[in-house]
Length: 207
Image (cartoon, rainbow, N blue to C red; front, side, top):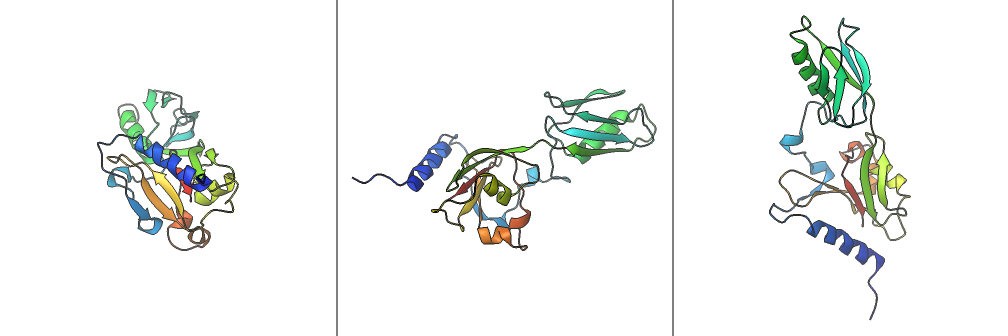
């Protein structure tokens, strides 16, 4: 009796993990990266969501005493002069700026607020399959699949460079959407692949 190949074992391990998820939702979908569109509920005017530990520059026009450079606390809030605690984690910089303007209206005449992320926390993903150093990875915010592949040590000798997947959770689906890439698409300056950005919680799989 022959033993299962390493590739087969990795695929079965991944499948077993996915089967542990609740079965009350629709299955995840498959899509090539050029055809991938984020759900409407995830589309916002600024793609970056503020995270705990990020350092923000909150500038209130013509109000130097209120403007601050501060870190988002573990509870997801920041402390601003006059306003005390303000929810920040999970918001886009533009949304936080608008919310801060609303809170300042009774205190400052015609407040104009801008929020810039000075220091972004690294994103946390996993890289599995036919890579030389699989496992959990910390990447700089804005990183794409090529950076993840490099962090994982590159392809093994058994890897298929046309079967690279990013598994991403979406609302209402039990299993993640499977976004497929080829290495050629990632390395050329055409299509959506070179500009695709990973998010915390993504799982990248190389078959």
